[in-house]
Amino acid sequence: MKYEYWLARMRGISAKKKSLLRKNMKTAEAVYYIEETQLNQLEFLNEKERNTILQAKKQGGPGAEYEKLLEKKIRFIPWFSEEYPERLKEIEDFPYALYVKGSLPEKNSRKAAIVGARRCTPYGEKYAVDFARMLAGCGVEVISGMARGIDGMGHRGALMSGGKTYAVLGCGADVCYPKEHIGLYADILEQGGGILSELPPGTPPLAHHFPARNRIISGLADAVLVMEAGRKSGSLITVDMALEQGRDVYALPGPVNSAMSDGCNLLIRQGAGILLSPEDLAEEWGLQGMSKKAACQGLSEDEKTAGKGYDGGGKKDSKNEKVLETKEKLVYSCLDLYPRSVDQVAAETKLDIRTVMELLVTLELEGYIREISKNQYIIARC
Image 1 (cartoon, rainbow, N blue to C red):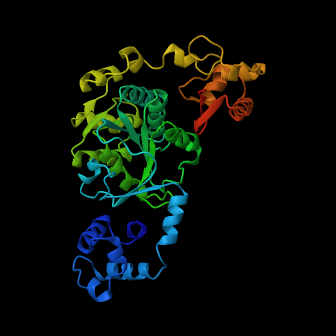
Image 2 (image 1 turned 180 degrees about the horizontal axis):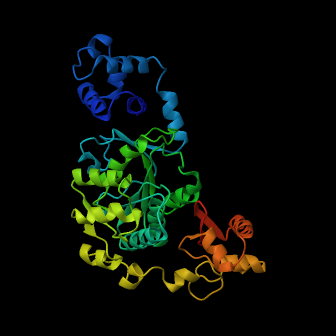
Image 3 (image 1 turned 45 degrees about the vertical axis):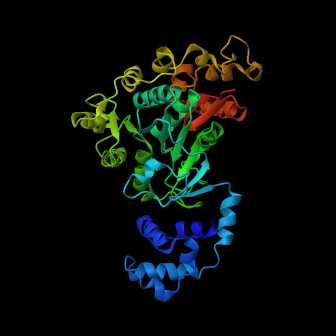
């Protein structure tokens, strides 16, 4: 497998050309030991690509790099592996290989991608959580890109209902981007989901990586749900790819005077499915699993009390039984499993921003709350 990894991480040759090269030579090991005269006979390669292969052969044996991969506990899954998702092979420019921490989506499960704006509004955040929570609660696996905003809320909603969610990154699978999502990154893995990338470990999150990763998000999914997007949102790139791949597209309608909903409203005008409520989508898809009330109406009372001194069954939670200072209690009481911003907490408690920030940091260090994106907090599940 070390030779396969060597070929997969080679830069300067497209995934399609690598696939042709391997098919022609039968194995990556044969590519590694190919003679220059034989290489020149492969007409589908241009001179630059041939030189790239020759230079890669001179950079030392592939064993050391493969050992580093194993040490990081990252799974290397090339396109010809039985584990490689069949749905990805259906798209024209499928990744040559995937690098995975955790698990891959189940082969026979239903999957939905939830995407949208990074700088989303509370309206978009709420429905990203609600729809993801319903879908995951009904056994649908949720896929997104772990970006700020809608992506993060989609992952978080899936986790709230105990479902599996998968993040496709525009960097190496061992690189948490954005950094403030380190808690989300860990929670996805802890709950049985996975972190995926077509980029080798250690690859930084460069801007040109993200449009390419969007084809993987849509490629893995049966349908793409756009929660909030402006007219020039990167989420619309995902939509274009989804349509090319034959995936269903849905959009959440928004106020006509909201620039953050322009893209969604335009998609609906062009024929996208309308996301009126999680309940309607569950009925349309014939989903079963969660009760309609639990799936389609925000958080249950049990979940709202979870982490606030109760375990959801009326019993005191020993972790939160510790006596908090009066102001800490005041701030803590404002939080639940829906994200709340620092400004929202300050407005509700009537405390100044600086004091609220200090109290939030204290509560986070003590394990009572968690920052899931910049200045957005939820209670920590026990």
